Length: 199
Image (tube, rainbow, N blue to C red; front, side, top):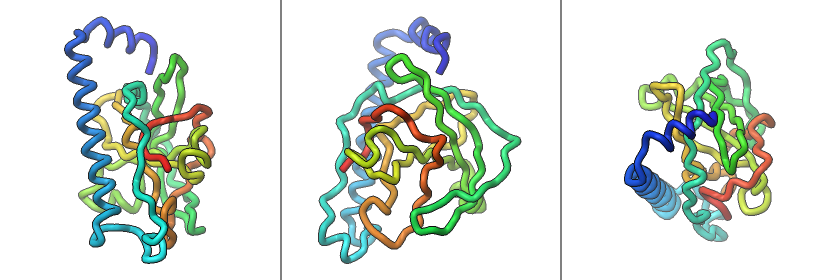
């Protein structure tokens, strides 16, 4: 997100508008996190193996922090070719770099690549689905060493809201039997993203 975009937002939005945006982000985060907990707790939907269930300590999150709800520049990369992304299980899955996002946290700009699964787009349900796998300075400490994920939908404009409070662990953080994509090295953030799921 460029500085002129920040200035534009500050100029055009009233304090009440910010309050509404914050409330919407909080509610959206609570809904997402509640659904994630339910997925693991429900025996009909839990991804956990019988062995993993014995040691599972629940899904935990950092407190909501609005600074991790960022307005990012969304730069499409239409000339990219499909590639094989490594997974925790040793197999490779086909993705394409769909875009790069640029955003500011604490006055510094960061970049992450956004990927599209070439298998999932075959399903109508996931035709607009995008995926950001990333690691940061919490990885291997407060969060899973294999990184976290954020799900997105293809935006209609050249900006997109990324809510890191909705970052989640792959199943492999809690159980075996899955082939979880490993975040590419270029999606390593050099700062702590203290938002979203944690141990």
